[in-house]
Image 1 (cartoon, rainbow, N blue to C red):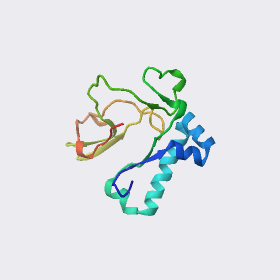
Image 2: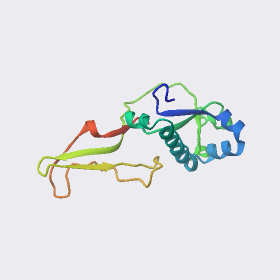
Image 3: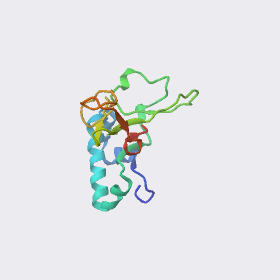
Length: 159
């Protein structure tokens, strides 16, 4: 991962199952409990191996899964409510795709009148880092002054 300059480590589910089958089952059936710990451990490991790597790319490190998901490998037609809050692999053919907009993680705004910078972090139900925040986008500060978005300083995710 680090040799390729990537920020996502792909773990084979078969390797995880061979290492500890109960852990594999727990991850597939309750990913919200395990993925934050995996991501944190990966970030700590990267920082220990090469402290400059994470700072250079400003990447948020994450763990992804690939391989044999067993009964958790489904098609869009077989995807149903029994898989809610579970880790699944979906195979299918995309027949229609709409415009994908990146999800904003942090917005940065500048106020011309006060010469101050304002930041706001956004989280939704899919975020593991706390409760969801409101979806309202900052356009004015607390005093009613107009804010200009600094798009180059905002942080986005594509997932």
